[in-house]
Image 1 (cartoon, rainbow, N blue to C red):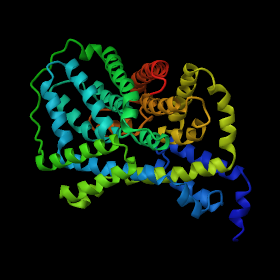
Image 2: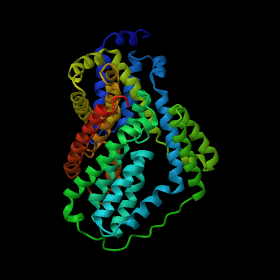
Image 3: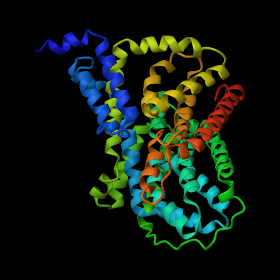
Image 4: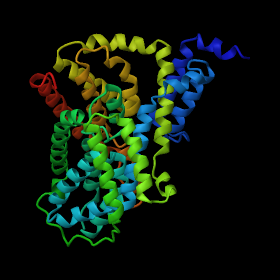
Length: 425
């Protein structure tokens, strides 16, 4: 019996099989009646790799990228304090008060949710803003579907500009050793252009319900309790994070240190913060590191790299198109975080790895708008809204596919221009 795992470990098809089954379960998740969600599927795959000896338990501890997990945990703690302070609710309600027409409301929602997503993670913004969008549109007698789709798509697009915008960006930032400002400087133009294109596509698709329509009544006065003392402390902590990152301190060390700092000075009961931390996402990441390592050891990653390598060694423009195409497909097959993890071993061996990383980060994020199931942010919006309004798969996809195409094309053009005119940046 002690030799059973060792014997299986010599069969390279076993870890490949575990990898394929795991990714299939991640891809279909629970949408077709399967009781395993993506976190459970990844966890079972990691355990399978350990059981067959592909990644022994002792090695599993070492292959987990703790820097990424610590970075995410620290930022989740800070964002949870912002949630408790009522900051996001306050922002959403005041945005509704500014708008005078349906188009103005749409534009404000797109840019507000997009910019906030870059700072506070796209999933968080969708989780908090969805019930507010439902309440505001009901009281203003505005159509709900355009604004719900706008929330999901703009949160995805906006999150591309920052390492704090989404989990895959955090992974890229830590793996590629980007500075906070360096990452932002390259991808902020991509996101801002993407938000403008997102607004244009939404306005075109829903022009009969949105364009040239004044709001029927004044913005609702929703009760929002803002804890100003806590918000001030959160703002101080957020400024501290940015300043320390700009000064070159470690992403994960700063994130976890400021997370501890706000836990101490925030004086919020710890259980209220624990409930808002996405522990499932952390387990999902940790499990995927093990699954990917087993796949690498099998030799399959080397074969994939050899297959992709030749097609990605052309000019910078051809390389950007190739990487973007691969990431669009992978991200919609297995989700964006697994796609980035799968592609990560290939990047270092390619020409212009700096810009390849930027293409990976932007395209894996923008790919999340293709369908209702392409990102967790989309699912959050649709699931929360489902009791009041139903958005079908094709109703979302007919808009999302166009948004994905035009924003990805804009990202390629902008990154190619940066590579041409700012080669040393």
